Length: 442
Image 1 (spheres, rainbow, N blue to C red):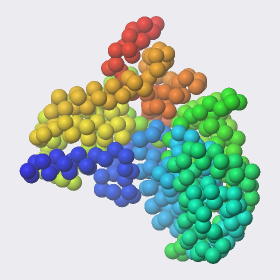
Image 2: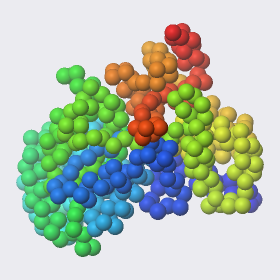
Image 3: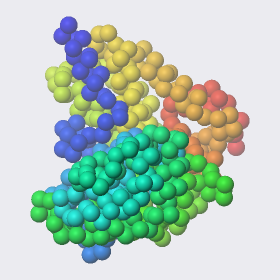
Image 4: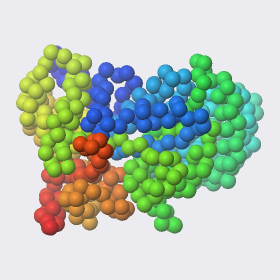
């Protein structure tokens, strides 16, 4: 019974979809094996030093650890007297499979209003909503009137509107139709609210930052004009996206960062900060021990909460080889590591976790990637495996978005940061990939 309880605790310790709160004891600092980048410096210092509002982009593969790093940044900024409005956009406000700029603006408005309603007069914003409520009321799926409602009640109705934008596909287009022509007026009253709120921020804070997370999950959609919705949101609508009167940080899909529009992004937002994978192998395919040890530490920190006296390599896993196999198969991708570990624990009745349990977890994950790759993409993967570079083409960018290709960085002997890409290790064991590699030998 004791071991069953321990296994249950270990299983839940590897929850793959929950970012770590700032200060969580299981957090592992992986800067030195990610190319020496640090979000507290790369993004935070710019906010602290600038005497004007800033708008920055943060990117990386989904599941690489961006949310955890952003929560660290939030805490650090708060210690520097910033008030930070942070929200994960896809949790309550946008549908990642079908998102547009209007959805993001409404989400920002809602969260800023909820967080700062006591710091400034919300009536200009609420009056904007009231003046359009007759048109929007049905789309919020309510028949209530705003006229005699409290501020909190009116904000709750606004929240219903954004919730329906996310949850109701049939209403999504109609809400956008009503709001799109009015985005400039909404930004104007929102900025009036922000201007006053910044003078009376909670807790004696002196600066304001808004962090919008999980926009990197917005699925790419090719529109009628040949551009993607990513281009429409982050480039074509950049004037509105950057126009809010406060410091802004948006996450952005990695596929857009490595597109033909990357120079436009730089012109608008300055350099996009990218969180790469933890490097567990070099670009020559050799095991990179510093990175492998960091990945083991991620596992160790979570195990230590419940089994501090058990050996990771002989009592939690049946051997160091089994542990290494699991870590290397993750590709240095933190969420993949957590998924593989949790799956292996789920297949375990008694400790240690066996090599068979790890192999079954790997096989299960590999099957998922096999289904992800389309037939014409195997040759593209084989080419990247050979060259370690991603060609600037939509076909390759979709593989980046789906995490079939992973980006790594390292600091060379001259102190320069070098970037390279490789095929996810799980894919390398798939027969179709092996055949494509054999056929693409130079």
